Length: 232
Image (cartoon, rainbow, N blue to C red; front, side):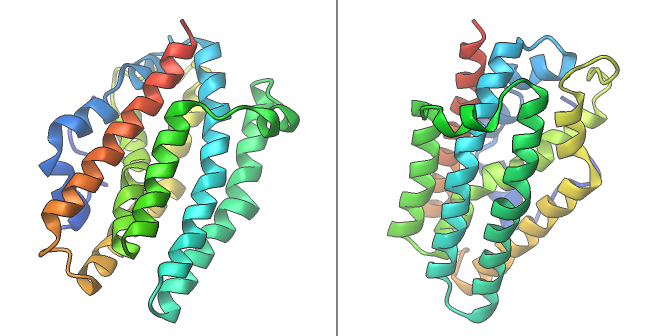
């Protein structure tokens, strides 16, 4: 992949510190063979369809995570932020995902009936467990590799001269996460993680937060591997 891009989170941000402290795991996640095959257009279509189906299931649990964030919130501003995240997933993202899946020959009935893969279960339940056992900061750190990581992946793929866009069936996915709208979402998540971290003593808790981030990153990489394995 290309090096850091103009949208790279500030080095002093909590996210950047967590990412840099887990550099090897982060590289395994953000430079996974699934993504390399997606970038050059060589990913098998069954692998991508399987990923799309499991990602739909993940989105449902993602919505639950924002519901949990509202419960864990300690002030009205935090409740409103969690509510906006929940509403965006339920009212916008899931619908867009269903439409995108239709383009790949996967209808809503198939999405709803699909069994949950172990890799999907492992990451989503880890996120929810961290949120239930810990506080709002633990929850958002567990979610960060997904929310912010997809933004970094999209931007780097889009900037990489090895990425093929013309004639690549996966170009829309790359352009979605590398595009301005999602980059704004990712940057906002970086800033909000700092805000939540300041309120809840992130500096004194950094080693524990690092462990959460590392495990969530590992589980995200396993999610890519799940998709790749489905194409074999």
